[in-house]
Image 1 (spheres, one colour):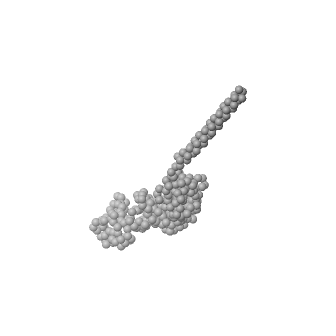
Image 2 (cartoon, rainbow, N blue to C red):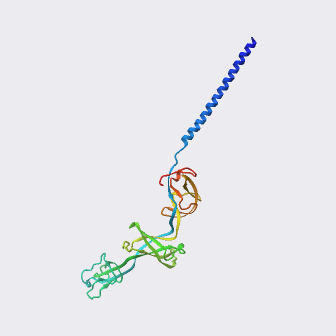
Image 3 (tube, one colour):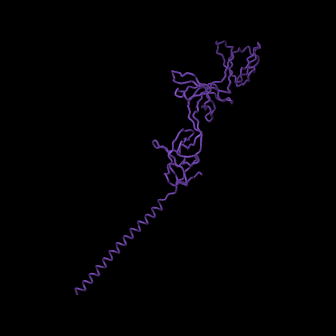
Length: 298
């Protein structure tokens, strides 16, 4: 009897052990399965499409440094003639009249006619009562084909200034237009009161758009170079380091660069990239080094 009970007890214990083993195996299988399923879906849903970027090909551009100032437009040649109204024969036509050199400006009764010393535009100024006689008239002749502008330049630029340097001239009256000029003369002395030197700019005014007395903004160009450059938007500056991202095989590659001058929204690059590289100009904030990108403007 005791032997039978022992056998029953042993069988029961074996069943319990088997159940426990099966239970833990099942739990292990479930946990493992959930782990791998989780990894699958995590990988599946964590993959994002490559960000779209706009690129520009690195190419050479004209870069320069400049000195900016302002000055008043002056006619290259100007002359005044004083006459008496009663001495004029016929009608005196002055306003908006252009004359050639040697042309009669005003015919006078005594045959001592007023002759143009050079080609230019006529103007007149009435004489106030009691000044030189109210019967008098001042006629002006201005050569407007070339306008000169006298400007003051800080003495720190004396070593840079020289005749022949290019100049760009603009005015609030012509917001979208740039007139071409050049430095024609430089003073031999520095003004001790302003610590500046006087220079003269000559400006081509063949269409007579600039008139004497007009305030002009002057930009003197120097240190011109033809060098590769990139858009300012492509450059990231962190402390003393500057870098851009170029695209190769649909992958963004970070390149440290050495930058130079800035002109017209571009920055010149001394080293780090080469002509022909595709640099990311828009979408820089969306990429990282070695990340996949999609060019949307190629």
